[in-house]
Length: 65
Image 1: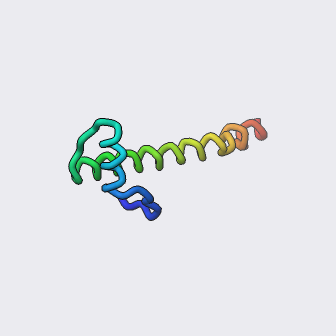
Image 2 (image 1 turned 120 degrees about the vertical axis):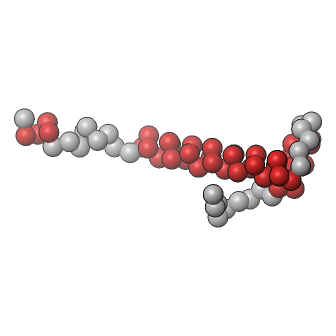
Image 3 (image 1 turned 90 degrees about the horizontal axis):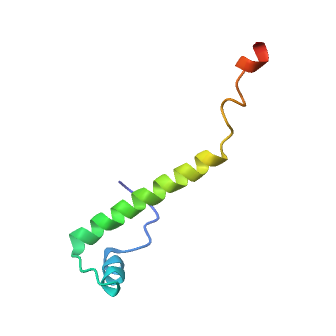
């Protein structure tokens, strides 16, 4: 999955995890970062869907009945 705005490098992730007692290698840190980016992307989609109008409110079915 491609994210244009990746702001955290693998080395930064490894450093942050190490400060919290979690030792990982480059591959594991990369997998963790990809997972977190996917979670963030889906969270933004969910947030956008909450702001979308309800389809039932826009339905023509109620108007014609």
